[in-house]
Amino acid sequence: MSRRLAVNLRACVCLAMCAVAWPAQAYFDHFLNNTIVGRLSRPQTETLAAIYRTALSEKDDGSTTPFQLEADKDAKAAEGSMTLVKTTQKGDQRCRQVKSEFRQAGKTEKWTGWYCRKGDGDWRRTQMKE
Image (cartoon, rainbow, N blue to C red; front, side):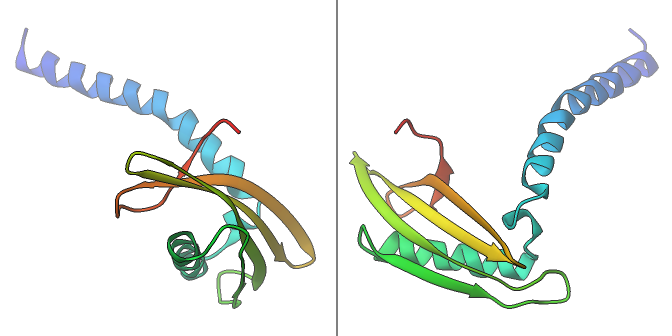
């Protein structure tokens, strides 16, 4: 096989792989696009993530943590709360169910989900059977 053909073949394979992956990324972006979370600015998202990490690591089940995210040049102010519903433990993996409520510009959204971490690692959103 000539060198030129090999380079072209690699480029075609790369483009095909990108074309296959693109719909999944587009779906994810579209899924959050019209939500309050999807409209938060980067600084608001970083603040919210820090609030979640602290609550997940330090608060007891049943506790509610309110939050306020100030408006900035890229996003409107938002507020809400997160409530830790229950905790499960399997080996060194700890999982916590969270109910969240977000409010922004007269719109309210409620989310429920699970976050897990192994040992002292990072908390990650996880799909779990209820």
